[in-house]
Image (cartoon, rainbow, N blue to C red; front, side, top):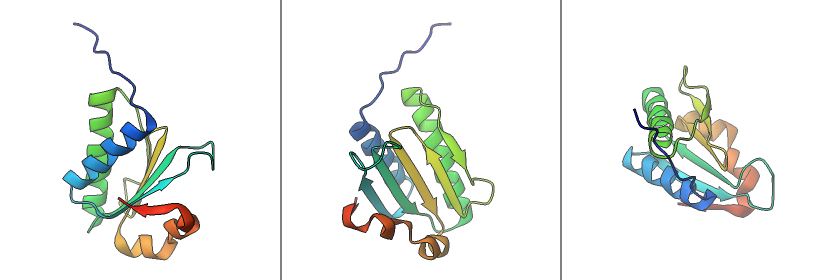
Length: 119
């Protein structure tokens, strides 16, 4: 068995991969927030919605699996069991996936409104 080596993507490349995967999986209202120089937690935050709990959970699983397979990135995930709000920590990029009603309630992107930009 040969070991697979993965090149570590830059934070911009990782953001672009995340955006592409979300687009492929029909994520809605995708917003990216550039946090470089604003926090040490991550470089980018991506916020998106799914139409149902099932879609939100599925998107988070696909995203996690693809990042592991293609880049060897092990992501940390919270909230997949309920699928209302899934937080996926991929290091330089943190992804928040919501059902629309839950996203509207928390209005996470409004906290970052001056820097939010639609993808």
